Image 1 (tube, rainbow, N blue to C red):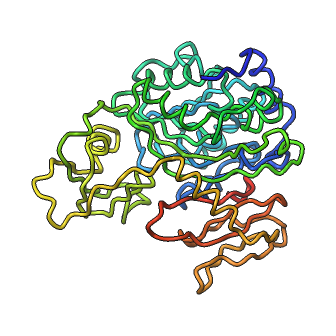
Image 2 (image 1 turned 90 degrees about the vertical axis):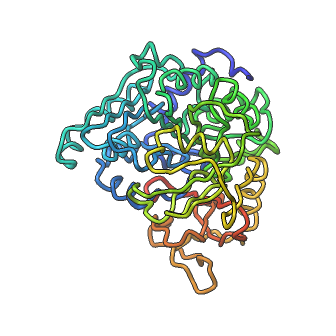
Image 3 (image 1 turned 180 degrees about the vertical axis):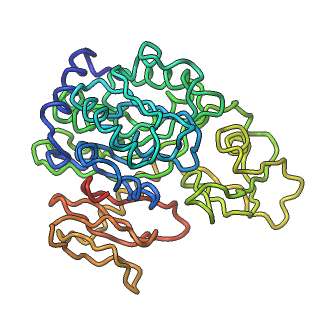
Amino acid sequence: MASLGDSNAVYSSVKDYYGKVLESSKDLKTSACTAGAAPHAIVRKIIKTIPDAVNDKFYGCGNPIPLGIEGKDVLDLGSGSGRDCYVAAALVGPQGSVTGVDMTDEQLQTARENIDTFGTTLGYTPKLKFITGYIEMLESSGIAHSSIDVCISNCVINLSPNKKLVLQGVFNALRSGGELYFSDVYADQQLPSAVRTHDVLLGECIGGALFTEEFEQMAVDIGFARPRVLSVGHIAINDAELQGLVGEAKFYSITYRLFKVPQVDQSMGGFVAEYQGGIEGYEGEYELDVDHVFVTGKPVQVDAATAAVLSSAWLAGFFKVSAAQTTDGLQPAASTTSTELLMEQAYKASSSNDGSTSCCAPKKESSGCCPPKKEASGCCPSKKESSSCYAKKESSGCCNTKTSTTDAQPKLNMLSCSNDTC
């Protein structure tokens, strides 16, 4: 992988940017650390109960917090002010645990000093802690091998000068069947040194963005199953000087799912999988990735790799998987959409916006689109009422919406707005 240069210089730059330069998400110069679809309604409800000090210093490019994790042990890489950890603590309940790892003292202080207040809101003391450490050195930070069920991370791995070491550490920390469920920033090409070493671009999660092909191969080489894409959104760079530095490179917020399950031979016979329900918030269907949405109680064909995930990962209790005895009447196994194609679709969806600089109200009209409507606050409201409406952030910092293209295309989450509304 391409090096970001001296690790200490990168650590110093990132610490300074997140600890001293940024006071809140309003100070960001790109949409990279605020991009992402509106969280699930259950997550939004929890976020409203989190202390303001924690929410105000949240910088993320997605919503990498799976539902259905009650009782699980969760690790958050680069936990920052702790917002995602607080959400996860509510989801895992009193029997689960959440550990955040971060290297920035100012962020850790915010995360730690609000735990008691949040515990009062929950009605119990959560097993929630924050460790000072580096995500490249999880074992040295006290994270034992095979001790984690789900690892999450939100726009942080790109900040690391040694991403392969991060992924290897996560792989070691995960139990068999565990998952790295995370959102991060990726580029559609290799980046020049001037971009990769620029302090602001590093801090804004652009300078350290990995080329998608490079990342996916790295994950497989370490031992993860084929990376699965859950959402893709194009990232706007609003600062003219920074736009000049990155040139023609395009950047995307992508939520990936990496499972630690046995490797399988894709030439194996077909399988049938059925989502049996049981995950609160996904009573009617469950989206594994952009290509696999399982309707409750409806068996469908799946390939060997998907069968391995659904039968061996932490999700196994929610699925019934068996070898296909017959395929009569069953939906064919879904093919895998390339990440390159998903990025192209996300960019086209972003570029086809009508260019209006007003903000979007989430009300869906009979036409199926969300009309632009500027709120009094000048920001985008957070409520997203229809899965067919998507939004993108314009250079003005506002959001406009458009409807998805066709049902045949993979669903892309295109909402990109300010942190306090998402």
